[in-house]
Length: 262
Image (cartoon, rainbow, N blue to C red; front, side, top):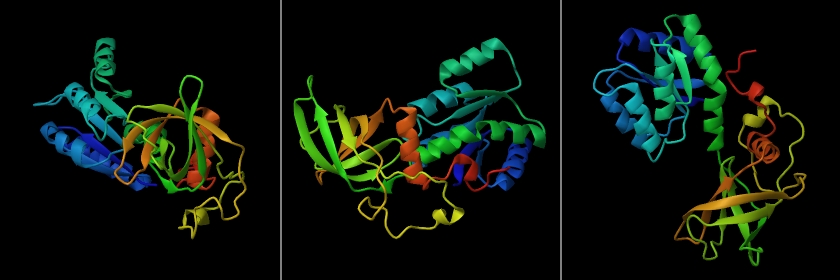
């Protein structure tokens, strides 16, 4: 599962060091930018899984780049790593205020680059996995209202770690929250690497054992003209997240993902 990481630094030697060290690790694709003014075109045109940005750059510094990332429509929630030569509290405070996820001293050797990217690997893979959608067809009981007096039954179309799509929309509006209940295939045993191959069917009615009812809360994030609706999961518990992850990955844990060093 290759993730896309943008590295922004005005020093070409640093960009070359990072790219040459990280690319062979196998789990990510590194894009590099020297002129921080060019970051905007990436933010609005490409979905990234993470950004590593230098704090001290001409034109647009790393703090302003971070603020622009958090204001973007496509990449607002991705992990941001701010690297700087100034390892002091005030710099860290300014960075976290701007919206960074991780703070690191600027790497100057292959060993430091390797340690940095190994440390943030999990967060960036999670961002990639959160967007993975698989077809999944099952009935979903939808309820809302103060006493859940409003109710309809829909069919799921796709599911991801972050949400699911349903049909029909049944008059739901963007921003509306509702309680969901549905069954999810239970994958209880770790899958072999052969499970990475495309499956002939990903639908629930093909003999996969079902787990107990999944009771989640969702928020409407879009409604289409074809009478379907997209929901974002709200307050997803660790147990529910794990169940969805197992369905999406076929039971493959993070330690089994391609490029994992053991």
